[in-house]
Image (cartoon, rainbow, N blue to C red):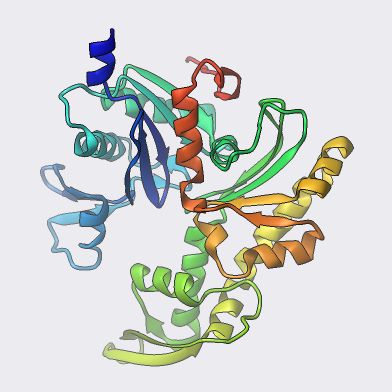
Length: 341
């Protein structure tokens, strides 16, 4: 049995809309790459995944298509997702054995059909045993919160495709909300701002870079000026303009307001005893969206509660899934119960 365990690849996976992260038993995080696939349109063969596929964005010819096989946290392209999972596992595995046991984090708002699709994709990619774990629960475990305690914890996990808000106590999610306004919508807001206000067409990678570099939820101590290059929509030639972080903040205002509103809505329906715990302990921010400048301050102002940004918030979900994988019997109560069709 010891030899079999040595050669088998038990993995935990944060199968995200924007990024896929993999934790391997006894090794920790072994992969963190974009959930992007480049494939040949005629043969359907996968050409590149992750960073290699992202580097091809906007530069391919007619025979190659680049896709993100997950949309809003759910599988949009079953076949390509399966191929991507298989390729990622092959990339990290030194042995010929497929993943024997997998713990996969999923948005808490997925339908039973969408959960079934995740299970099937992992099983078709070679996994013998697949356990699903809700992302907010994984985040809470990943940042070191005691989810088995009776004290309530509130998690706001802002990923690429979904934002997950949950109040957790006694190994369960007491109240939660999973909605499809997250990092992708923030990037899209930047894209639309340049298109509508400046007649400038920029690429997705440029929009994401601007969001990360100068995007903010509150005024900055020193506002930043940047140069942005793209294509002029009026005369179809390359063009460069200057914008400030004030302009980008205005562009991001609507999706940020939607996230704040949903946090307030969940606080309204949280049971009073747990509300008292949250008043004392505050809100924990995780996911890539937690890195947006000033978002914690914005939530602190709007909720009048302490707001903490997790250390390395992008890694919280996969770390939590990894802890569950390494202690499956201890964390069996937090796993999503399987529903067979």
